[in-house]
Amino acid sequence: MLKDITLGQYFPGNTVAHKLDPRTKIILVIVYIVALFQANGWIGYAVVTAVTAACMALSKIKPSNMFKGIRPMLVIIVLTAALNIFYTQGTPVRPGWIITWEGIARAVQMVLRIVLLISGTFLLTYTTSPIALTDGLELLMNPLKKLKVPVHEMTIMMSMALRFIPTLISETDKIMSAQKARGADFETGSLVQRAKALLPILVPLFVSAFKRADELAVAMESRCYHGGEGRTRMKQLRMQTRDYIALALGAVFLAVMFVLKRYAL
Image (cartoon, rainbow, N blue to C red; front, side, top):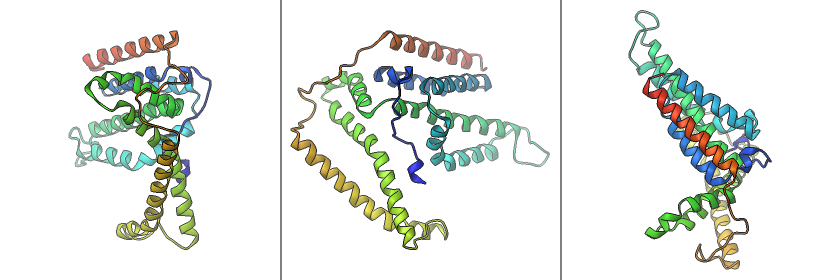
């Protein structure tokens, strides 16, 4: 069911991962992505997998919740694996076969890369509230204000988008259930027939989304919202010792991945 999708959800907690400054977590996610794309061998992927598992353990996020976030990407994962298996040249598994050992290894590595990328980046939203994430991102992008970039407006839009993803998913699930109760079929037929069957879902979903956007705009205006100029924060973000330790560990992790790539391990 669509309601099982965990994209954009925040799981409150009192773990070390939850207590980290959002700026630290944003920087660490960037470091993680760079390090992941430096993985060039089985040892590199093993290191990234171990780091991801350790972060999940620290944040106490259930593996089932992580799988729910990966599940919508299964089609892309399977397609990526198939393309690498059948289109990578090398030593055939058996004489005359187009499947090669190098293709299998490449497919496994690409699947690992996608799964680890999703898992690592989702940990950011799982352990950081949208408000904290917005504040952290805005502070990191503050230098761009000198170039007249509307940093606050950009971050507030991102915050609202993250906030309404679970709401829209829940709304879509309700509309689909209502349509199925009226005899709608979304699972059988050709691709064109399935696409046509989605029209009764898309129309009320778009109407609901625009209605929510209009209500949100009215609510913000009634509270005298006028952008980021002169705004203050109830909770000021301050870097703690744990944040500097986490950043140091992230730097060590990135250095290790560069070394492993250098020696092709």
